[in-house]
View: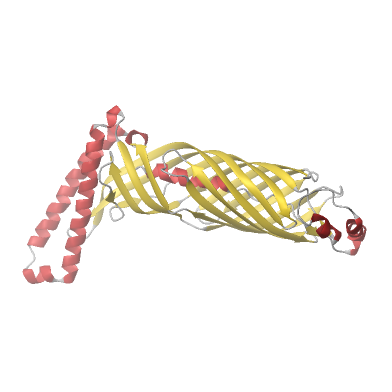
Length: 376
């Protein structure tokens, strides 16, 4: 039901994905680069950052400009897993629905524009900030399932929701990296907090992205193109609590009919369970298998009846806009990792253009960006 709201908020956390611009402190090697290497050893480093920049440059490392700002657009489609789901209406009792609610595969499409200022604090350590605004559209399909006397589970009510949200994200990150002779390795890490109106507190995410790449130089000294492969791992804060309007996530015209049909099916299945149980002898009722089946059916039917009754009451006042849903849950990405490939064209030491794509597993993502660097 309301879970599209939650999932939209969760996926917008991924807008903190600010892939490290592929510049790095590169160890100059090879006879053909001897002149450049020797010039670095005697050259006075003109900037305050990174710390120890002059010492490292004089050891034969070519340093990028020490500060920069990136503008990126990020799009992704991802799946999420929800557990420990509890739902209540109009600030009433919340019911645990893990046993009876099942989620069908749901589509989530999201996009965001982010700005990332960064500095090289040390010659091999870049730190950056994240500031983003994003939007998402999420479609969630869920159903309430209950068993009958033969322990066959069937859907008694289904709900589909669609929600749109705007989210503001802030965060920080760091990237240790090293390059030798055009090859390089980077470990991008960041954490962020996203403010979503439907959540009681900002939601947290942590991103880890190792990359291994190679930079190829052009005839112009400052121009090159880098290509890389890597992995992308997402961790999001598990606890989520929120409060939203019922009318924002349910089509009220059809919801009441679904609730009424659900009541009929619960009553029908309860009759089947009671008839089966009463037909058993005392010895059969004492059988642990039958006893467990009976308890499971009654517990599920009671949960379904409770949530339908609460929803029925909330729908009676929903037309006035006063009905709300309170929820809590645990969330996690369906797949923690996916594969990424990317490329960056460096027009000169100031300007870079970047693209990156992620795929495999249950997450697909695309990033495009422009970076400007300067000395600090």
